[in-house]
Length: 264
Image (cartoon, rainbow, N blue to C red; front, side, top):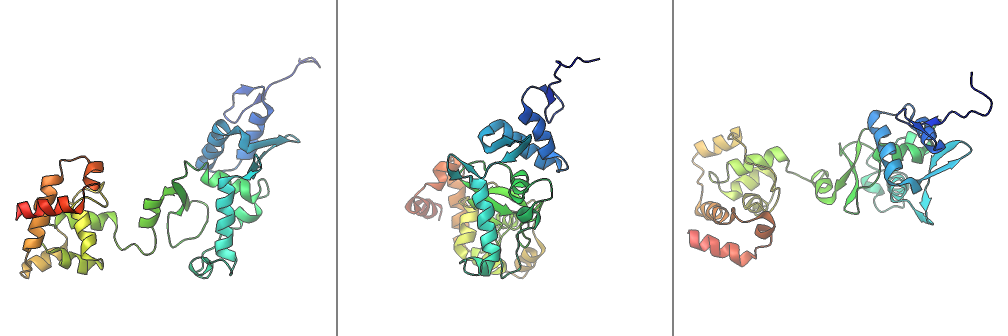
């Protein structure tokens, strides 16, 4: 039997013995959350302990550190403003369009405050190049629909984007078979967008598809010409494709023009 002077060390969130009472309180803060939210909180606790405040036996997530608002808290405040404040300049795109911030991120879940539930959902911001992005752009700020994404990924996921990775792969597959203008007309984009895709300036990580889409087969069978312009662009891409991507993206337009004239 343990004596009155014996102390049993607290256990942390992973069941290991620890003398730090904050580690035991972390398990309480994580209780009932999905696995990814628990990982977000534990990772933040390990990397940024100054984000956490231990008082009265409870662990809380700070909204301010060194007198400045935490960037993740600023993102929550901005999301609430966009969806609830008619005076906000982006309200017409969010609140007026039916987007909302889930009540659990505003009032909490009874154990954690709304801010703590939000922080558990999104985790630490990777760096300044990232912003909050809704995975399903037509959805709202609800659990399971939030992530940190770069500006490029977020822009591709916006409602105004007309291309997708599948469409880009198809464009690369038929780039030598149809005129750029015909491809652009089908997808509702400009010809220069198609040219940049074929030259690898945009969406460089998407490879060409291994099939020809049905709509392209129909145009080809109807006698749509490939066009001298397309052959030039394909030849120019062939002359520059062996260069590193960073170098290829920095080529001046006159260098690409020289490659096209040389290929003609």
